[in-house]
Length: 259
Image (cartoon, rainbow, N blue to C red):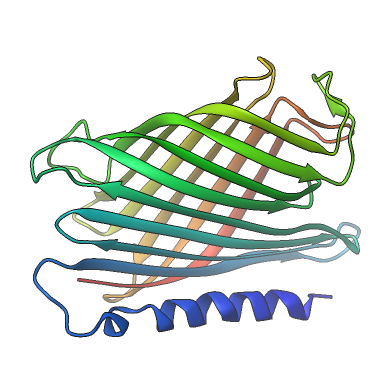
């Protein structure tokens, strides 16, 4: 059965969107731009192989003349044949400084928190800094980010594949590359989004991972969308008995507001 915890966590995400809506900032100005996006979706199977999958995401973007603040939050719950295989959080906050109105090379600073049952991650805390490049001036939602950071992770076990480290704690400096984009297709009738991240540990050459997400949404009215999202993860260093590749396909309902 579905856990009550999922509904409580999802409700907290939704309340956060309401509390931090543009009205919370007082009277809007011409220099302030915002976008808030909430999605919920899943799938269910019953029979010899039973499965329940639910995911809720909340994304917020606030922008003025000098600063862009992005916050991405997601919660995933998966139960297969009575076993809980996902009860996961992924939170990421990125601040981007705009040096002037024409530059396409921008400094970024960020923080990431991750909890993942499948990879037996109790918690991951990562801080990072880098540069964001907008290669096409007319498409600000298509960009590269590269840089370096530091990660501290705690696991429920201590023996890893492709690693000589035997410990339930892993901490290391890292390099990363991120490619993301949004595109309107068929005269704004279809929204295509994608995000690719690659992370490489500076401590172990074999410790790397990449994460690809993509989604297609079709609008119904001004603020409501239906769509599908695909999530693909590969990790080369992980605890024993975990496959390198894991993916997830989610059908969702989406609501957003923006100016």
